[in-house]
Image (tube, rainbow, N blue to C red; front, top):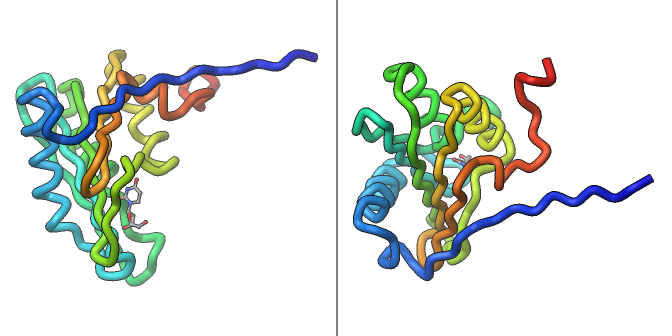
Length: 160
Ligand code: THU
C-alpha cells in the first residue's frame, strides 16, 4: 500500500486590473456577456470568453431552464459554440467570471465539475493546454496554465 499525491498549481492576481492587457480585455468581454446571462432561477450569472488561435473570441453565458437540468453553464455554452463554429481552431485561453444578483461574489469562482470535464475534452482534442482565468464579481483572479490543474486524475479518451 502506498499514498499517491498529486500537486496542482495556480497563479493569483489581486484583481482584473493586474492582468496583462490582452487577458484583461478578454475578461472584460466575459464580464459584459455575464451581464446578459439568462439566470432567472439562480440569479447567478456566469460569463465565459474564449480566445482562439485564429484570433476570434467566442462568448458564452449560463442559460437556465424551468426544468433545471436542461440549462447549461456559461463555459459549456462557449466551448461548444467554439467547437461547432471553429472546429479546426485551438483555444488558447478562457476567461470566466461569476456574479450573483443577490450578493457580491468576492472569491474566484471556478468552473463546475461538468464544465471541467468538457474543457478537458477540448484540451485533448487540440493537444495543447488551455489557460484558464477565473474570478468573481470583485477581487482576485486565479490563473491555471491548463485544465489539468483543475481536474487532477481526470478521465480521458486514453482509458477507452
Ligand atoms: N454555472 C455556470 O454557468 N458555470 C459553472 O461552472 C457553475 C455554475 C451556472 C449554472 C446555473 O445557471 C448557475 O450558475 C447556478 O448554478
